[in-house]
Length: 126
Ligand SMILES: [Fe+2]
Ligand SMILES: [Fe+2]
Image (cartoon, rainbow, N blue to C red; front, side):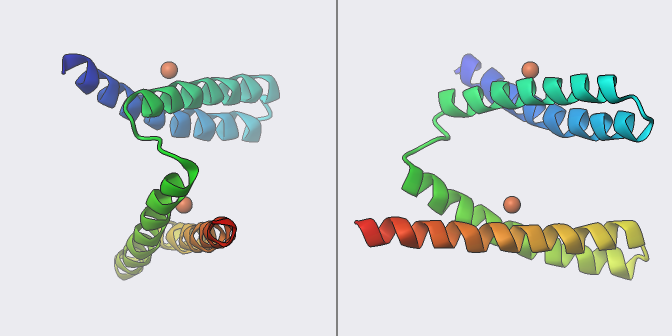
């Protein structure tokens, strides 16, 4: 039981680190530190593979159809959450957050639509 809890926490912290390393890599790139940017990006990919392995060990990964159905539900929720977040950011006058919630909401919509397409292709084969 303790191992499972530690793996869950590890999954969360590895997942956090992916985003941080990618953001820091981007920053290094903006500063013209391309070698450091590439190194930080490689670390992010290592953290992603650590997180992915813990996801698998924790039983979060099923067969492809089930995985896609699970992620579709997540994308639908993410789209709704971003829509609400963009309204909150707009009301509070946080323009940078508003703009990015709007942009990322469109990404979630695209993810949702693409996953739906893949699922219907898979279902057509059944
Ligand atoms: Fe790691
Ligand atoms: Fe998404």
